Amino acid sequence: MILESIGASMLLVGAIRTSNMSDQKKIEKIFEYTKTWIKTEQGNTKKCQFIRKAPISDVGTEYVYRLPLGMPFKKLEYLNENVGVFKDGLHKNVELDWDGGMLHVNVYETDLPRSWPYRFENKNGWKVPIGKTYKEVVWHDFDEVPHLVGGGTTRYGKTNLMKVIMTDLIKNHPQDVELYLIDLKAGVEFSKYQKLEQVKKVATNIEQTYDLLNEVCTRLEIKQAQAREQGWSNIIDTKDNSRIFIIVDEAGDIPDEGFMDSNERKTRKECQWMLSHIARIGGAFGFRELFFSQYTTADVLPRQIKQNADSKICFKIQNGYASEVILGEKNTQAADLPKIKGRAIYKDGPDLIELQVPYISDRLMNYYLKEYEGGADEPASNGDTDLAIEFRDVD
Ligand SMILES: Nc1ncnc2c1ncn2[C@@H]1O[C@H](COP(=O)(O)OP(=O)(O)O)[C@@H](O)[C@H]1O
Ligand SMILES: [Mg+2]
Image 1 (cartoon, rainbow, N blue to C red):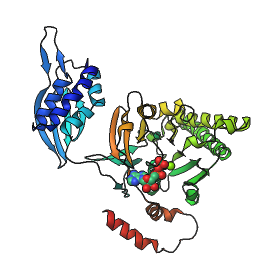
Image 2 (image 1 turned 135 degrees about the vertical axis):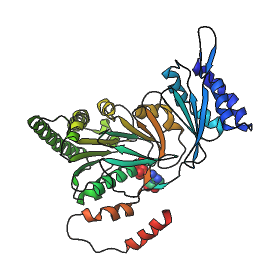
Image 3 (image 1 turned 120 degrees about the horizontal axis):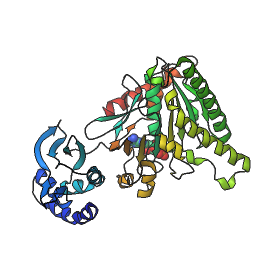
Image 4 (image 1 turned 180 degrees about the vertical axis):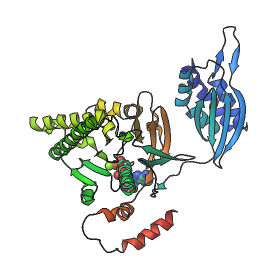
């Protein structure tokens, strides 16, 4: 059974790490240790067959193997979940990928950046940069996957990612994007964005959250009626470019139920219902939900929201169980992330990608967005000189 063989192989992996075998030899040894082969009824062993190797730009090498016919998908998935065996054995970063009967073992000489500064780029559509891997920038496309759920221990970068997403959406679609912000950490993070033209409402307590969500639900009904009248079923197929984002930071910071009176408890339940409702049916009508929390229990992260968000992102988290709550069963990887701020596992459909999320300082965000702060143009402040230094330092 592959499960046992991976456990046992960890011991052997230590031995190959210190040997001076080539990376290709090491990969093939690991295939042996992990029994990545097929046994035929006649008792023959059919192994992965080396096809070629090729450089991945200047960051690593790709090794391509032909998989033996009949290799179960489950076995490959399991191997991928245990990609740590390759990382340990080669003492390098490794990613596995398979398609059309081929297994690609990508070996990287470089590490992920410990910090990756955000820069705005004009682009088409509703894509935002979500992070950088060993080899490329990963984008989250809100027209493909409308909702995003995020988790991770406090101080590892959830709010920063929401700021990156807000900045990028506003810069790229100043006319079409509308934002509803829910910040239950008493508004310490989001209150200051109230003055942006694109920000419709900011809620900082449970009553305001209730009003905000009511407004969104009413708008959703109007859009649904419009769709019926005009005969469309998904906004992305129409000329309507408006998109409404509901961004929830620290959803779990709603006061403990024990301290709530029954009215508050009822309001909280209704808020959760509305958030679930928007997640469940809003996508087709241009409503996008971002739901981030350090708490990952079911009463904070309603099942409906999780089920309707096909992408998830999880920063460093306390244990494998908490990681599974965000990323799905058996996906414990966020617990093993290094203690680096902004380092996360992004789940895009079935793919799990380790990446470094872009970092934006408050000053840079202010620089990008100050033209959207209603009212008279403010004279350029001295801060711009400092900002020039910031650009120079990081580029
Ligand atoms: N992507 C990142 N890259 C580098 N540093 C980051 C990143 N995200 C956050 N940080 C640092 O960590 C601090 C805490 O991040 P924050 O987003 O407030 O965490 P959370 O909301 O998860 O508690 C930030 O003030 C910043 O200094
Ligand atoms: Mg935060």
